[in-house]
Image (cartoon, one colour):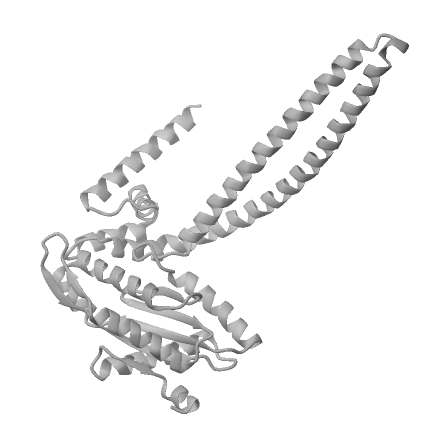
Length: 346
């Protein structure tokens, strides 16, 4: 069909142009970057095109971090909604397909066994009955067809399982910050809502760390966005290394991170925050390409413990408030919500 060929060719032209831009800008070949530049080349979203053009004109040009922000601002909501819709439809189809396969497989097995017994009985009495050769032949073909059906059902079941695994991988990608590999803001918001509901139902402690890289803008201006990206990755690795199983580190936005600590009271949360802060302070940032020592970076951390019936926004606001105080008082320090400290008897 001519229209289909035209569409195919346009799609390939768009893809080639998007890849060419990514290569020219030395961007990582991630699905998110590719989706961003396909949309940019397509030109249907004027706001996205303008935002990308402005970003490319900035000193230092476009980086993977800047691309992630553009994707979040212009494409993420739509893609997330599409993924949720596709996921729900896929799950429904999978449930129906597995149920049908189970029923059909059981029925096919019973039919095959009954048919085998029947044809076996016919074979024993064949000399006492009219010519049953055609019936026996047909019955044998049915047995073979039934076996083939069962094999096909097994193969189909395996393919559906692979589709489910692919969908799980898509869900994980949609919940992950592409630069640092830890949870993104959307995933963090969902996890916090779930943790608060759990804490209200069965109190056991829930704390939040808000973590910010000190003087990050100055570092970017001095050493470039690519080195800034390396610092963001370094901080994310430290968060993962210092937290407990079941805790959730997330990139909250820009150079700010959040760590959700289910089951942690304020004093334990402060200890974890201090471990994170000191671990980052001990590390040196090295330009791997040149070997140049770029010095050290530090973190300021605000800590707050959840209060009964508090909203997520209120908890974040309290942790942010003490984070600001930590920065005001000199940075490279951990500060906890004073009301929580008083309540804890500290």
